[in-house]
Image 1 (cartoon, rainbow, N blue to C red):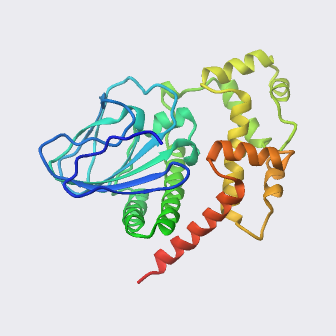
Image 2: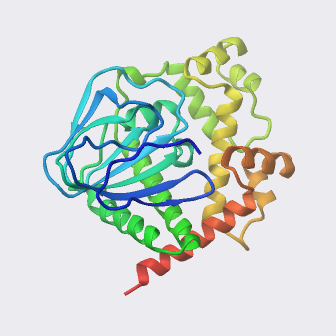
Length: 308
């Protein structure tokens, strides 16, 4: 796991880590030294600033695994206690915060939230306000989950952390669904049609660059160029989307509903062995381990909500 630089709290920072590189940090900042968010770079991104004037708790989601350079346009976001703000761990924003505040930070690989590279760039420029519809629902719940995960025994802490990841995935999806892409995120109309076509045919094991190009009356070479301009390839895009759907299916259905081989076949994988291998490469664990962890996280979350 990459090293991180954390805030300078007056109380020890508590952390919970899961096998897939998800980490939750909670701590309080008191003092004159500038506060910093956990990141993988040597210095904050000076063009991206987060501003706050009131003490209280702020929630941050650090996205790991990005490869696209950050948006160079200057950005200054005003935050209030309870707001949820996504950021890129390679280019952490500069904090202009009061001397005393509480930080709850979720460090999550972007692909676990279902975020493509362009999506990650968009969501880091739009925080979720505590008094918004989603913020009112999720901000206190994420805060409680982080606190409970830090205080629980390791196994339960991991399960609670996965509940937080599921909530953040929902939050990211809702945020992106409600935004109109800006000029920097605009895609050629043909690429938009191609992505829609891929979504409709993910379950088809014969889906290939040749099939996609023929359906849209373009050359395979031009198809590859369209995806190259987005920082990926046709094959990687199809594989990632299939793995996303398999991961969600395994999480939703758990044991005793569909076999792992059936889930893989449903989303176009012809070989269960190949599916298990690419799943482990992408997520660091086998499909069975993921399914069991997701089932345990669901039980732990249910117990946490039902606790007095």
